[in-house]
Image (tube, rainbow, N blue to C red; front, top):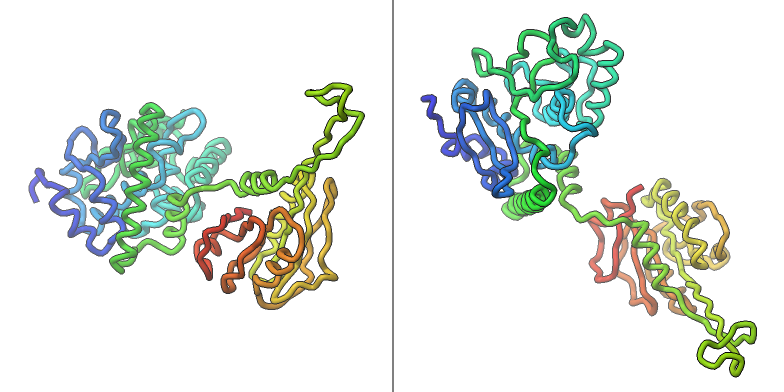
Length: 417
């Protein structure tokens, strides 16, 4: 290949076995430049678009496998928000650059040129794979302060390593085979160029983030609908990506809102309150606003103890606003186990039944009584129940919400423990 190598002409071939990254790639502009030694992604401040810049001479020297790995590396930076918002306090530093590469490269073992920052390899032998960039950043800072790991005498030379202040942007000059150079000792440079990260104004960054979020959503739909699969993207990585593009709802706020909007007003006359319209002529009115909420707890074993503990902890805070009736159930409701959680009380959860799941049982119990709202904590693994006479809300784990047994137009909220 000549040094005028055009990456755009080869991207499809390089990523044909990686449908997800191929779909993302089509939504990222790429341009050649010798202004950077290797490659990099950045946010164009004028267009609010992400773009990839690459050195054609660097790419010329790489094998196809390594070209593919570098492309995936760059797209991971965009997907994980390293360019726009995931920046440490104090701004960019060489340690943060290395931390982001360590997090990404954990999932690209054997697919990148030698000399890249890789957990488990020199000088990061003691660094485990699969951690977040923030974890690696804290680990690097601790090792730097203690002169351990890559900062120890056994790890790298401590004199003349050019990293005394932890600054620098990485993207060192490539070596003879297109591999990153470590600059003559010390911590290695990052594989790619990280300059300009986080420099755009907040409005531009927000526009770019929303565009990329939509692009990733479109890419996931594309690979799922076409049945192409995700290529080498692991199940854990797929889950992380789906979590990032899924709308985030604070379940605690939703729970509070549901309870407060379920409050009824009860009025009674009282001479102790002055009537504002007819003072000292008619008695005033005292208004008591309380909510009587039914809390049905699925007793099947697939409802985790952690989720139950988180839910009951939040109910303890909300007991100042409402009275709860706790209804344990499996395929039936045992009325001897139903109890009232009065306003202001503290309760601890316990599992008192075991068995299957039937949502008709608690719904019938609630429909036959006077409740303002009905919350069901469950795994959603049972047929759709009969209609509820009061407003009903479902709460389950994120994985159960993503894969419910039935569909409903009622509010379904994921509890993040």
